[in-house]
Length: 299
Image: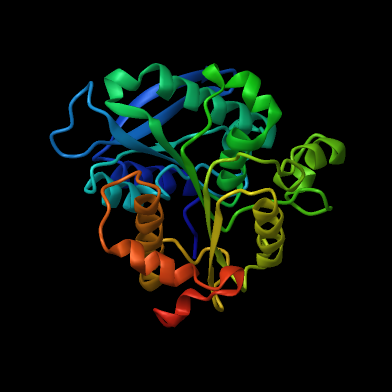
């Protein structure tokens, strides 16, 4: 049997279908090609409004383009009156690049969004970064790196971060760290080495059975962050692996992640409060050892 050889075209067709309800704009021209952002607006949204913004950075460790990964989450939160943006960054399979270029792209995107906040109708004080795996690493760079302070105009930190299956430690040899120009650079850019006071609130959603970005690394990161006085919450998922949060992986975990994110943002007054804040407080009660499966069974 001959299998089709144009898998990228299949992926691009899937992306077009999932992103068909978004508005797409060019935010950067690079030597390797253009980069776009895909924006989901709330119903009847108008320029000049001050809606909260969620910027989503997809996973994949800078290998494959996946701008549609967070399209289901974008559609959900757009219905909750958020402007939602899912970002393209340069990746190895398409642009022959690595994490350094992706970091640069993420910072340029955030600046572009801030510079066009009136047209987008967003509140500059309510920009939330969301990322998965390598995309979570990009969000952490924007919030924590000293280099981002010099790159982000007005040195404006995000209001909060939501980090799923996050890569927080690039100090040890692994397949991810080998994608950096050198081990020295990988160590210097490790979020675990950037911990300091007065960082934005963070919510981690992580599977205890994650063999790609270990749960233990996030536990350690959270402990040191809280020791510095930062607001960092962790919701752990028993027996859940790296991709547990995706819509096409587990509907139970997908729904639970949506509820946890929504409640976290309500607790921070980044969206209208409801009694779902009590759900989140119960979810994280007891610290990093909590398991979300006390509310929903593991799949």
